[in-house]
Length: 109
Image (cartoon, rainbow, N blue to C red; front, side, top):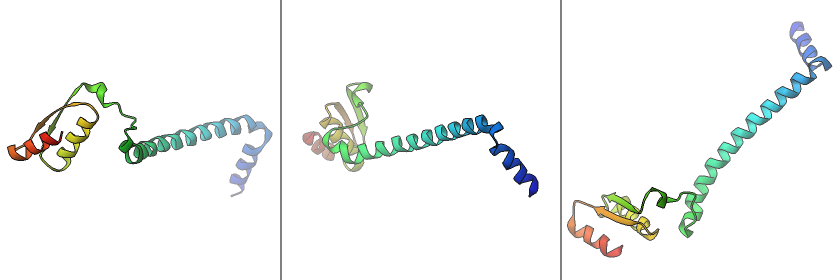
């Protein structure tokens, strides 16, 4: 235990002031980087949940082209995707197993 106390005393002395400061800067930079990454991830969820209904999004879907292909578009998630992509101005090619349901979705779009 005495050896440990001596080591701490030496590290806290003026001789190691520069090393302490460097360690503090590196530690602070690491913590800031960690917090900023978490904040960026949370902002994505915030944008997706609260801002997307008003058309505000971090993602520019039109950079991938003007067409979107949606399978299973007659109901459920596929239908929701097809309607949302059409609302955002993309040309949508929809596919489904049921022709009648698909025609109803086509009329909605």
